[in-house]
Length: 62
Image (cartoon, rainbow, N blue to C red; front, side):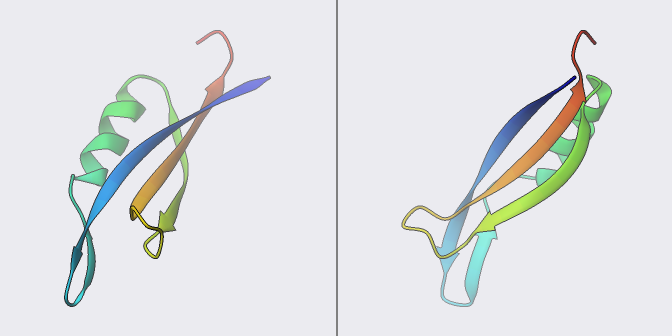
């Protein structure tokens, strides 16, 4: 069985688009060091509060 975890990275709206407010690559590195595997990034750029959801998984009991 696997468990899933999600990290939200807020976006800052700019004239030329949206930009992540944090370093998503560092979040992925930190979570990998804790035994989590990065699965996917889901972008919500057009939402009222734009953000990026990072999806992680690992086997239960790790």
